[in-house]
Image 1 (tube, helix red, strand yellow):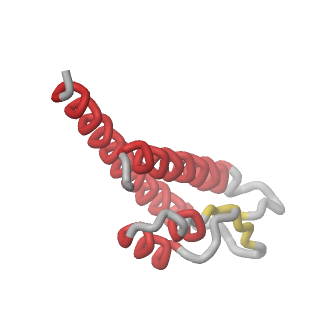
Image 2 (cartoon, rainbow, N blue to C red; image 1 turned 90 degrees about the vertical axis):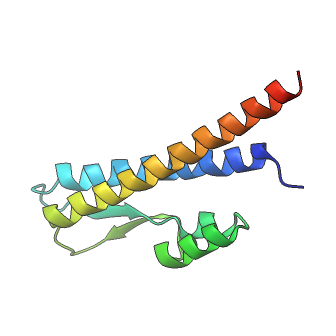
Length: 115
């Protein structure tokens, strides 16, 4: 049986992953001129594929196979690309917070109807 608490846990995990990716992307941008700095990124694919939802499965197929921090040797950091990734990540976070807000609203409605 599916409950709102299951969905809340999934959205919470997604928000945590998005925050970690934002930190990695920000670090890439901050260290753009640091000699020897290795670009870092986080892929959500493995985590999303375990959530058993068609939407999350589709997202995992698009976002990649691994959920680990990947370090990309010898790749020059492009500030425009990093800023674009940060913006896309920000949009994902906005979508996740809206979903969490909807879950909380649903739970409040159930509680109020039950009074």
